[in-house]
Length: 214
Image 1 (cartoon, rainbow, N blue to C red):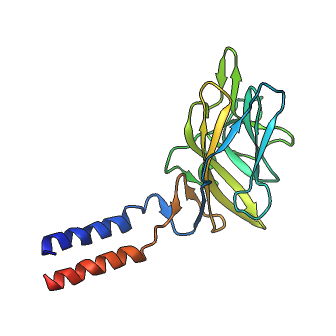
Image 2: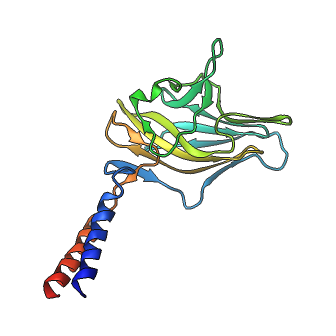
Image 3: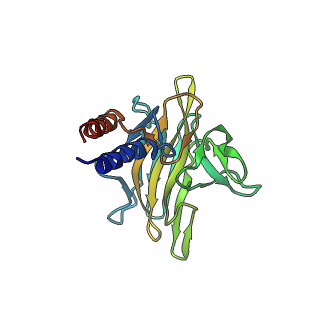
């Protein structure tokens, strides 16, 4: 292996270890089902479907999704909260806000025009509402992140869920979700755990050896 190739390998390994700095954190727990969780009202029945999301896997439902022939929505369990775009007064609540990659989800995310919202008992906040005359809801036709705040014991944690919501029918996918294990620490929408750096350092070490022999 000549020196030029070895240098390229070393530079490549350095780039790999640094290129995730904006989208990865070392204290994140990430979950992605083998197949997306489909929320879909089927067969023309009047049945309403529900799906419970346990973000941190502790056996407690943190958020409940609902789907019917005309509605997709979410309810925050307990004192957990979701980022919404509030409806103008005198209305309360609002539409769940789709967040772009990199949006910082934390205490200060509730700045205008967004707000943390715990919901109302027995009420589901809309991802999408589907009428014969059209649709309503900020998440309709979007693949984006939902900002979540939930409690684990006495601590508050932040996370995201990646959702796909259809434009013309009440169908949605829960693609993946993640949360920051450090209490009170914000998380970027789409952030995942840091990649393992040991294989990269090994890779660079092989290149260095090649340089010495070259």
